[in-house]
Length: 124
Image (cartoon, rainbow, N blue to C red; front, side, top):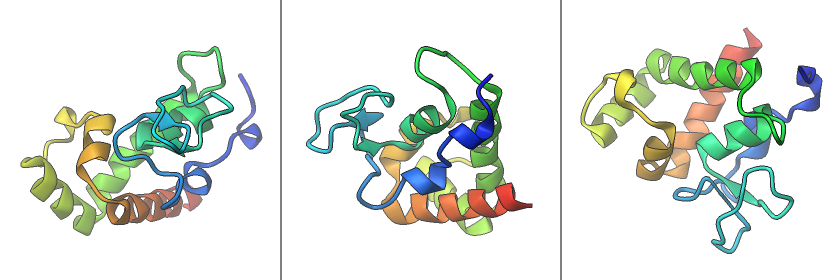
């Protein structure tokens, strides 16, 4: 396993210019690419998780699963995000939320708040 210090944190990768609402990753001009491609310039929430926590040629890592779980923890613990999620998704059950679908239904403001909450959870 690759030590965590080699990973970029999700909140370091995603910002208003690097977040992609509809593609898992793209080249900045809309051409879809792998999150591990050197051409990747923008990432969805899931694409960012893959880019930051799963090394190329691996399918899964403990770090990826931990951060994916932290995304859901942030949605549960932040009341504002939880209410926005209910409005956007029409339900509050986290068991039915594919991250890519959620990503396509929200704005950068939501993602930014989510990243801030994730960062706080990770610092505890």
